[in-house]
Image (tube, rainbow, N blue to C red; front, side, top):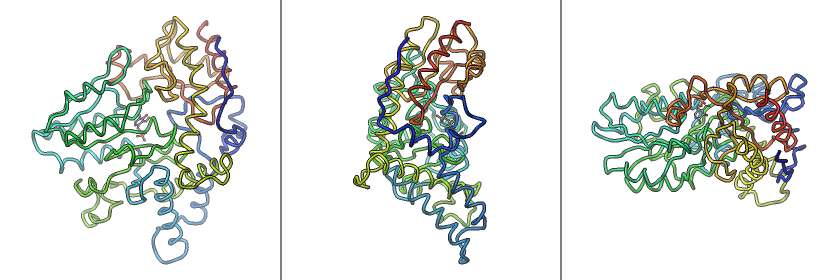
Length: 416
Ligand SMILES: Cc1ncc(COP(=O)(O)O)c(C=O)c1O
């Protein structure tokens, strides 16, 4: 069996001390490998959330002290999380979830699209960045599908060039699929779409927990993530370029049409959760200060994203090596660590994914199973969506010892 290397750019003790879940008695003895469904929340977020509820739970942005401070916390959350995404506060929009955000965005895009316009969607996406766009066909939009290779599950950029035409107005695609994990070359794809005159909506939900990207560098017109998977509260976040926001329809109350943060969030903001999102940035600040004291603060987002990835890669490689070495497993997506996120789905041939999950749970390992709302992708790869896949997903706070234990538990569980 492959053994894990412990080389990590991060101090695991410090990292885990920032997550109350690791000292929670009811979670002891269980290693968490279902992070792609929702990560543990960092202490800074939990502290902000509880303090907000205790001290600031009033309507924000009035003159009285608690209200003014509540508003300041919300503004700070936009600014601070925006720093880590390489964009100003004005481009950071919070909404209830990514599924809700894409739903509203798709409605808002109806003002941009004329009958006969074309959009491109993929069959690699989670349904949240697929179905809502496909439904625009009901309004006369021509919907084209950029399809994965059925064996690898990967998208080939050269095929995109054949789909783009002068009528393409929008391309929706994932940064990384929540099943296949392949890291798509986002900046290149966006550049190709822009060269053809198309806008881009990038689902970064699966990628963001492995290092919040610099959205400005990627160039996406909309970049989506879900904060409950990036150590934060249950909120979706969308970076929307100001140029696009102006073109999109107002989906909020008509009298709020000039309010940038109200146009795309008809549900209204969840004040406490928006305010608590600032804790994610504070956690990253602490991580950076601990590992790189005195380093240039302007480079902090870059350092943090590199450090998260560097902590994961040495653990991802042996996991993939183990899965690849077995004849009774089909790994979905690349088996080279550098090409994928630490979200690894596979089909065990000798037992049901659900049963594998049960066996691992008995041994103290938490994993997920099912279709993960990527039904189109599973069908394209000839995987029965009803049976689904087993999925192991981890992030920078996972240790080499946990991965080593998981490999041993997997070996035993696959045998019976
Ligand atoms: C890749 C991907 N996109 C979108 C979503 C939907 O996110 P939300 O739960 O915030 O609606 C998920 C959720 O699992 C996901 O994994």
